[in-house]
Length: 291
Picture (cartoon, rainbow, N blue to C red):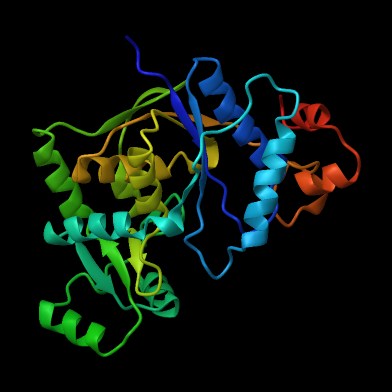
């Protein structure tokens, strides 16, 4: 008997939803609904400096409004909030640290930028120049002294060590994932360099949190915008290191504005809240979002 498809929509309460979010939510729901599966909501609220309770309430109202008139539309309760799950992320970090894969990085953005500019040819990844590894070689005593001294730091994944260990755990084989529409993809997490997995003042990162969440929520099909395709390389590595489930992925196209630019929360004209206030119906909004 086939396992029911489980999808999720995971907005951050840092502003109002726009048509791009509407497309992502409807896409995830449709993939689960068409297969008799389950559609979940998750609130990604780890950035306490930008997240607001009022935005979360508005997001839930907007999604409910968006689904009015759709047979079977809805999501399972309770929804998962990342801020309620910090112990899960701390446990994962502790495991990675025990494996010897994490190190504290005390570099400021200015220091990193200066080192990159001084390099003859700095390697680049999907998000720009890679971290040059300034703090990777610090000894245990130096790391401890600087942390105890109250310096700000980020916890970075030693990518080379992590890839080597993941290869051994996989019996020498490479990592890969199944992408709907693109087939089997060979994971290349080295493209991202030593990614940040947590900071002194924020106990997790997007990469770590979503990987843990998808496992704990038993998500079997991760649907998200094609702008996040590159992030899956890192997520596949973390799944291997932590022994997590490996879902299938479907990276869909993005809804863009009149000028072809990617929509952002600051684009008020495209927010669901503004459309509601202008009298647009849910059915019309779904059509605008590609459904």
